[in-house]
Image (cartoon, rainbow, N blue to C red; front, top):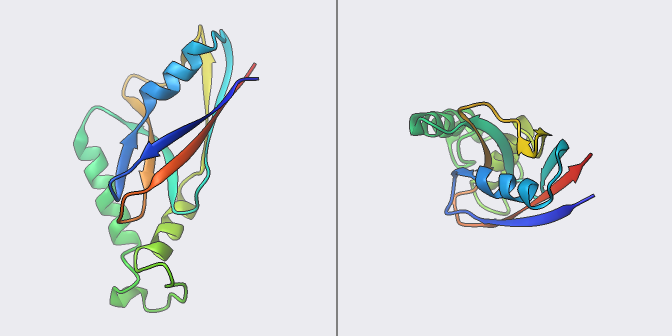
Length: 140
């Protein structure tokens, strides 16, 4: 079955939509019915299917996760031990653990079966830019 690696460049924390790249991968392989599996090969970012119409959704999600797991140098996070890679690293691992590193999207009539307002996103949890790798795998 077809498989590919997609490299996504981030500019720091936030949601980065890559629906069109995933849809193009499916279209390139002319699979009528099946399943697209996406897997991110990192421990400080995650994958989401989320609304792609109103940018306030992305801002609110980012704000919520910032409150849920603030930087390690925030007094509320004084219990954290892992701090070798900076104050954003352990909170990024927490955010990744609470979300998903893989997604499955049905394919029908050669297209992703996403809802009208759904998009596929990489959710970057680190402050600085990173190059992230997502594996795309099609199965019948």
